[in-house]
Amino acid sequence: MNFSSKLIEQAVEAFATLPGIGRKTALRLTLHLVGKDLENTEQFSEAILNMRRNIQHCSICHNLSDEAICNVCADKRRDRSLICVVESIRDVMAIEDTGQYRGLYHVLGGLINPLEGVGPGELTIDSLLQRATEAETQEIILAISPTIEGDTTMFYITKKLKDSGVGVSSIARGVSFGGELEYADEVTLGRSIVARIPYKLNND
Image 1 (cartoon, rainbow, N blue to C red):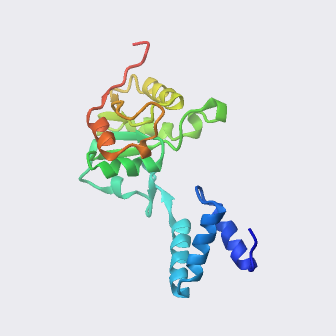
Image 2: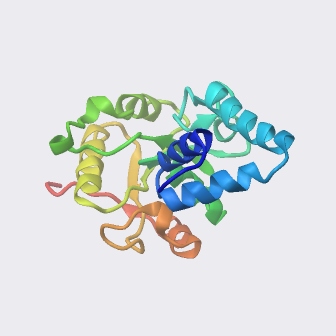
Image 3: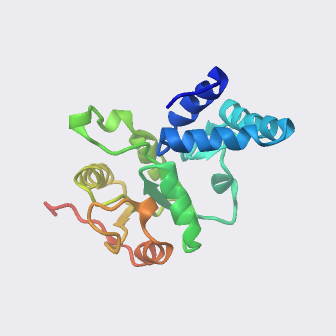
């Protein structure tokens, strides 16, 4: 791809670093911005910079937040007896879009995967176990994609919670094996949470 402008080339290279953006799409986005008013481009750039400078992780559930505590954790109308455990922030968004869950969340930040060097210590499992000791917590819902890594993570968490007195359930397997929650349709995902089932250890 030949460029008549080094500035255009640099902008294309910057866009092309984003996931799912090839060089042709990056060029199209760059030329779109060139055709916009400078004020419009400045607003776009400022929104991205402001987000990156000020976004933070909720100190309770590890969701992305504008403040130290996210809107979900701060909402007194949420059912504080339920904690829905998910792999990523995208999963929180997917579940919220169903409109069928009104409890709290806990974002693990990944799944246990020894081959990739990801153990329990690299995830937020310790803070989840701490939250399980709170008097309000009655049930922990494991809304984790049913992959090998997902099943390993669910088994580990359930084993750690075995003597906590807190109920542990998993979403119904309406989400296909090996599927990711963010790609499940809202109806299927919503039903899988409503129809959750107790999670049992294999050796019970």
